[in-house]
Length: 356
Ligand code: NCD
Image (cartoon, rainbow, N blue to C red; front, side):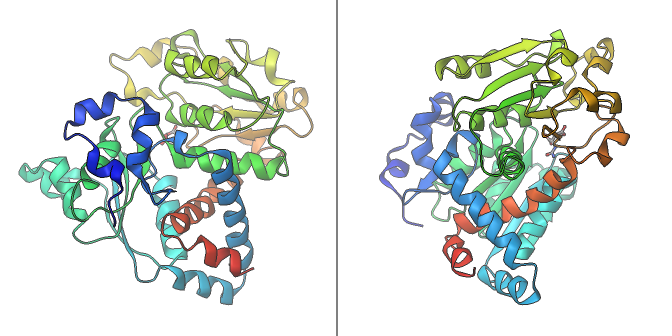
């Protein structure tokens, strides 16, 4: 990979780099004007999102036939990817794995640090650098916020950089989830993304999906957001400041029922108790933040009900049968949207456009 001027001029001080404003950092994760490392939702602007959604639609369409699937499987059959997922994952892992397979990418995986040389005392930084000796891309999920970014920063300073994709970094960001969530909205709204009211519900403080999704909503006009959460788990001030800076209307409430009827999309989330310090989740009554079958009559006839999954009791299973419940489709969209993103990073998105 050719080093861009931004890459060579960056300081060798990680802590200093980490603290910088996101707008200053983005050039370091870009190559030839294209997104190279996918780390933050703020890297995805409206033009790129629309392009990725069209690529996703095309890929879904032509892979319905065997010839189309075979064609897709030849696009990146020369490439190899590492999936380093050292935090629990079902969907993100499997959808990335299958996205790679659709494009013909060969994959290796580590899902537990106890099976890698980290158990012998190797630093996580050296571990991930090792992957780049063998593969052309690293897709990773890590419990420490900033570690995925640090990996990309480190890798871009070596003479063998490979693209890094963030599959979830602590409580912080989950940009590809936000990509598939927005794609799900785009499909559900027939491409009409402006002028919508999105209601996000649950543990908004510690949920990375709602944080990344909020960033993406800035790309659309006249979106109003409604944050419904227990008092203890309200959306963090950095996100609220972001909304204020961009003049995006929002409200916060604990009264879910009172806002259901206005929503164009309801985005449910589970309580993120793995982040508890001393059992604080047990002190919260989460039941007012559940969507029940009886609520179906209160919502608009074309409102969509979403969830990044996994769910516990936030959505009653009886709701699944309602056509407005799109979370299973949302889950499957993840595989296609991630395949589109990977095709873009490797520059074979043009081949996908031509195939139709
Ligand atoms: C989410 C995650 O890992 O942040 N799941 C996912 O990626 N589909 C949401 C969650 O775990 O609650």
